[in-house]
Amino acid sequence: MKVSKYIVPVLVIAALFGGYGLRAAFTQPTTNVSLGESRGARLECIVDGVRCKGTANFFTMLYKDVEGINGIETFATERKAIFTYNPAIITPEQIKAIMEEPIPLRDGRIVQVFTCLSMEPL
Amino acid sequence: MKTRYLRYTLFLIVTGLVAYLALGYGSRPFEAYCPFGGMESLWGLFTIGEFSCALGPLNLSLLLALMALALLSKKSFCGWACPIGFLGELCGKAGKKVTNDKLRPGRRVDGLLKLLRYVVLVVFLILTYKTGELILRGYDPFYIIFSGFGHGTVGIISYIVLGVLLVGALVIPMFFCRYLCPLGAVFDPFSRLGVIKISRDETTCTNCGDCQTACPHHIPVQTVRLVRHRDCTNCFECVDACPERKVLSIEAKL
Image: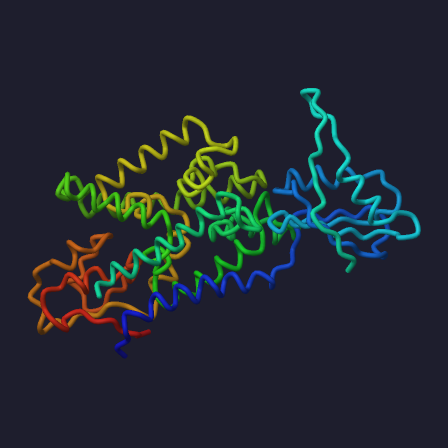
């Protein structure tokens, strides 16, 4: 069956938009750390500074010994972190304060590595 | 209208969008839009259920969508939207004016060199899977160019690689796409099955060879009835170059 040459650019554009739309079908995180029981309130944060698995691991390390944090999922390309926490022990404001706390680097500088751009309970 | 103008418009839009993202204006890093990242993320997803390094859902969804596109319309992504394909084609056209296409390797050497892209694919995947990092991105022309020659992983070897690729593209059109592109290697089996392809009317064709000369991949269109070649990008340069009317047409055929 003969077809118009214009079908190809239409298909290319459809594939690019289709691929973009299909992204929601994949919900796997960049890191998924369980620090306690899996139940609790959930908080979604958009975090400037989470760019890859390395920074995501560093980010979750900040909460390793924090009481009340039960789990953290990070999504590097979305710059997103989802906390599972116990609201009786820790509040969203405290969670935000921990990530924004300045951190001493190897060269002696003390800098704020992560910035919470938004917080939303799930 | 010549198809080339339409293709170049689409190329420019996609390249502009990637450049816009690379400048940090988008909500995601530009790497999140690389379909080859989808291949690199597969091992991590299957083994630990996590994306590797700076890869995410968009890499994978774009890869799947472009595989479907290859099944429908061969390597149209390469010939209509890939910024590196665009650069390769422009370099090839510029180089053709200087070398007059005389430095192109013979068919046998060309065939052997094309196997290199499978080697590149395997090496990229093994090293990415073993380390969990995109450690070879410093040698990826897409990354080198759109990262603005920076981001720590780009060093002197990256500049040498980019220089070799540019000189190669001037001497042999589509040098990177032909011999080194790992995404092209992924698309190869899908492209062979592509439904939309160019068909040639053998009774009216004069075998002048203008189609092969115009083809960025130098596919011998004048020797086949249906172009099933894995490198065909459905760019339709051959259709536009054909001096006879209705010899070459576009068909949807399994």
